[in-house]
Length: 447
Ligand SMILES: Cc1ncc(COP(=O)(O)O)c(C=O)c1O
Image (tube, rainbow, N blue to C red; front, side, top):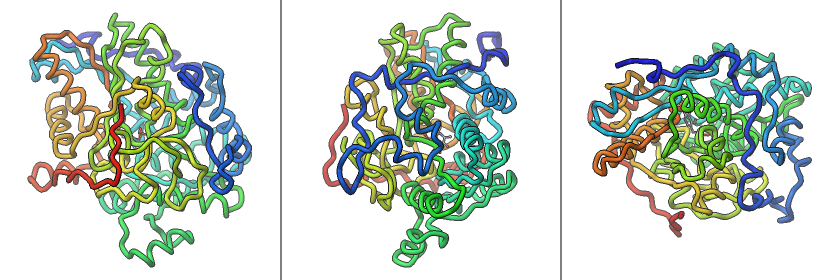
């Protein structure tokens, strides 16, 4: 039966007033970023050449809470926050599980995912600091769409380097970005020295997030009034997503539920952090399981090494300590373009190393099959990235059935898959290939 406990809503004024900072809650301070030429730790000042000063301050802030500017809260309200938390009643019935499954509706943003939550904050700060143009990369196009809309909202020009394979698989995404006024090119492009070099050496290169980041950075460094914006990995980006977890916590409290497991898919880690960090920062929830899900085709958390590496492929960024497959790793052309990144956020990496976050990897066929099952019963077609979290939730619910446990499972429905029909079409036509586990030199399995 559909009731108030099926679709749990908050009022407009319940949009959170602050972000939750995970840094003071980590067991140890994060290893500092290093200057690649000297090997010495770099201070935050070095980052202000490419990022707005306010974002750099947040990158190293130790305050447990950071206020959200009123203008950003207004933008959140305009674009659909607070988002509903939904109980998957029909999915539970289909699975015949005693578990109760809840999902957070980040797919309801006008650009289709959680990415707008940070794009709006970063663009607000950039505008206040006189920046006229933002350069960025995008994988599946969700981040690019969010930057394009945020730039149009706050009056900046957006320049977007979209990973070539995604540009081809998801052509309509580029139309959406252009509709918001953004300029967009497939990456590797002929706009940058690094792109031209790759195109010459490897014609038709499918691209990767690491390459597109290098191109956007090169653009930002060489173009007047331009800064760079990143949609994941860094502390300030993950911080901005914590509106998701705070709302989820308030919504679960409304129906007197405490989660046993909180799940998110992980590319660089922002939607996972967004839902998980507010729970992690609250001692009341110290026993809940935090589960991060990645593709076996790009297994940075489950098969990467925990070490210093570059954030991009050209080696332009400072080195950061994270689980990584190495900056030169070009992932197979899976449909979950947003999960094709060689590393994972330093804060999530530290939490994996300490055993607080459990990483898990799945193959794309089983992931999209779970997503279709979910769509059939709940009516929402998830983004292929999100589908990883859907599969983990379904697997936990099936286990709960076997052990007759009344578990409460919460996952972040980070985005919809309306631009990803080619993936589902391939699955339904039996043409989607299982990922072949990749060959890595020194697999080191995380805790
Ligand atoms: C819908 C969706 N979910 C998840 C991700 C993965 O990014 P992150 O790990 O930063 O949440 C992406 C990235 O493009 C995405 O589009």
